[in-house]
Amino acid sequence: MSFSGLGFGEMVLIFAVLLLLFGAKRLPELASGMGRGIRDFKRALNGLDDASIQASQTQTPLQAPQTQPAPAPVQAAQPAPVETQQQG
Image (spheres, one colour):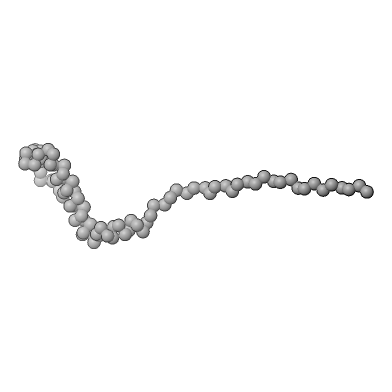
């Protein structure tokens, strides 16, 4: 949308009229609702709906960070049995 035909003064006047009509508390709610409506409209034009968006998000799960495997516990070497020589 282009506002090339509107100057700064006209935009201030429009904002002042909206402020008088709806009040300061209501304007942010209207703006967020209008943004949500535009976003939904663009999704509808592209053929996307909520079900296809959720399906594409579940098909590409976030990858967990790569971690090193825990080292295997080291076993202490046991001494070999000592053979005693018999004299005889």
